[in-house]
Image 1 (cartoon, helix red, strand yellow):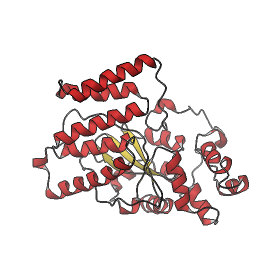
Image 2 (cartoon, helix red, strand yellow):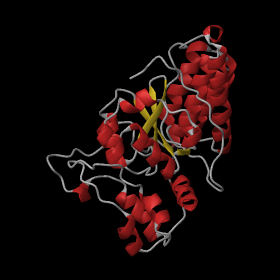
Image 3 (cartoon, one colour):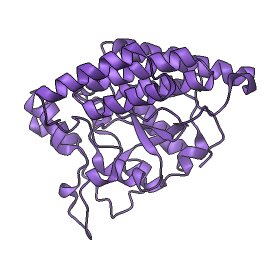
Image 4 (cartoon, one colour):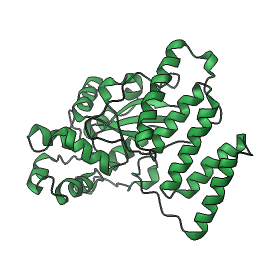
Length: 313
């Protein structure tokens, strides 16, 4: 995997009408800055500025999107903008509190105190968390899609039937059929059941693209439904400079089978594009191919299919 390239490639903050930004997973405050701003080239500084602009838009519209806040913090760190790093770290901790993840919030605040032990905002926030924890002694498990921890996925022994794979079918069925967006017949017509033990021979079309191709439900509306119900931020993949070397370091069959694409990295995290935010099997297979954390983004399916085909011919 190419670990020397910096993230922050140029792309614009554009999304389908009505589609909001949502979150996935995050990362911790870096132990030290990867580069000081004085050593960055003008091009690298411009790329990081584009990253900051994009992710400020995302986090302003969705303040609990701690994945994007983490990326924003990393970009500020690389530009040696210490004040912005601290402020973003506080926003991350606040997002954790809002989501009920008190232990994660405490860890985030403690990283600030390691640098600024007398920060009054952090001290006050920790006191509030302590009070909240006393009222709710048992913290609930995070209500997030389990895409970063391998242990959270079911083990599959031998050739398990495809219906037992956590490929997102149940969640998609509940979202589209039980909410009466489409009929059960339309769902069966468009859903492709994949056996992960058998080579696909090509890119498997995403479910929401099949819905659009058959004139059942438009892609833009499907993306809005998914972004409203999942925790994945939306990103227009066609405006992003994809890291081809990074993408090809992952199993081609996994990317084709589940139509997913690792497209960039930030520090020790890999950004992955998908049109099915509930596919835990895809997350499991990609996680087995890298020691890094996976950060997932919802992208237009046609752009995803085109790039997967281009990179894994």
